Image 1 (cartoon, chains in turn red, yellow):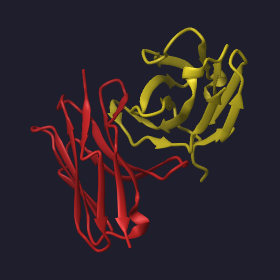
Image 2 (image 1 turned 90 degrees about the horizontal axis):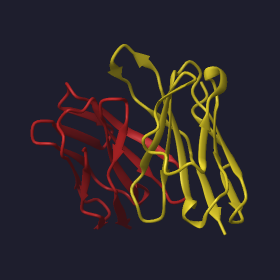
Image 3 (image 1 turned 45 degrees about the vertical axis):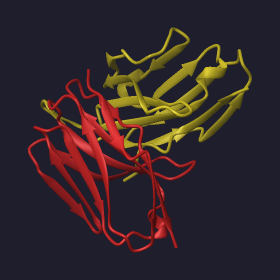
Length: 111
Length: 116
């Protein structure tokens, strides 16, 4: 049974700091991995999608890596800003087109 | 192009009442999924449609939940009768199908359901 774990559960950093969010999954047989952002009371915004054959994806200040063999992914946020404050969710797509989510990391960037 | 849209955005109902949530997927997407997040828990898979057929409904919590996708377009999720523990945010997602490749799933904004 696939399980997705995110560490840390919450993180508070000063503005401008570079940070790393961690995601681990128990079954390496995944189709892809997505990082989402969720703002309070809002829906899910897809940030980055990494196919199982890829090692990383970049979008602006965000970089996500994937190591399928070790069951790990990291989301790197460079030069954090207060507007980055949100919950970040890691999700893996498994066989049968089912997506399994982690519990998320709540990020607070202090101005 | 319109994204995945969900109606309503919020719903407050009394215990024992019926509520129907609607999801309009991205046009042309055969795959449609329902997920929900109850307070303090992870987002959990409920079920998956391929066109009008239920491909996987292993995540449906009990028989008070009924999902339909008539004609393979929009989908509805009915909760009848609603219980307090059904409160949460219900997300819908859709994706295209390219053979066996799992393509990116696009999520709607969710419906926040509160049962009082």
